[in-house]
Length: 157
Image 1 (tube, rainbow, N blue to C red):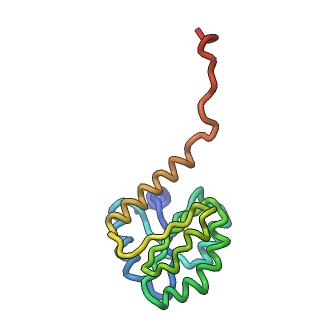
Image 2 (image 1 turned 90 degrees about the vertical axis):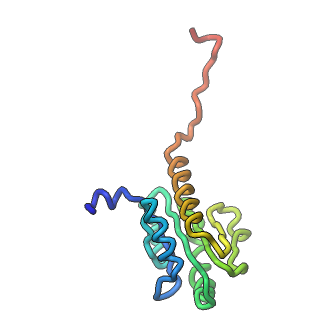
Image 3 (image 1 turned 135 degrees about the vertical axis):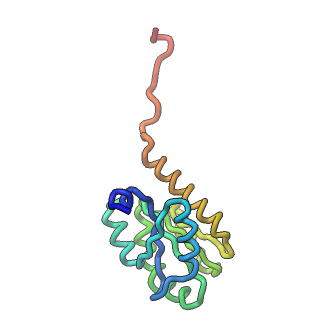
C-alpha cells in the first residue's frame, strides 16, 4: 500500500484504557477493515492534543469499557479530559459499555457529540452504523451553509 492510498483512507480512533488492547478493538477493527476504514488505537491525552490542533475536519473516537479495571481508568482519566475534548465540535465520541454509570449523555447533552452504546452489541451492525455516521458527517461538512439563492419569479423571463 503506498502513502497516497493510506492518506485517503478514512480512520477512527479507539481510545485505549490500559496497556493491552481489548477484544472489542480487534472485532471492530476486522469489521471496519471490510468497509475500508482503519481503526487506530490512541491514548486519551494524545486524542486531546490531536483534537485541539484541529488538523482534521472531524474526529470519530470510540472506547470500550468492559471490565472493572477499565471502568476505574475511565472514571479517573478519561472522564476528566472528556469534558475539555467534547467542547470542540469537531469530535464525536462513542462510549461502548455495560456499565450504566458511564452513560454521560445527560452531562454532555449540550455538546451533542457524545453517544453511549450499551453492551451487548452486534459488531457488524455497529461497524455499518459508524461508517454511515462518518458519511453523514462528511456530507454535512461539505454542504454549503448559505442555502438557496433567493429569486423573484415574476421579474424573471
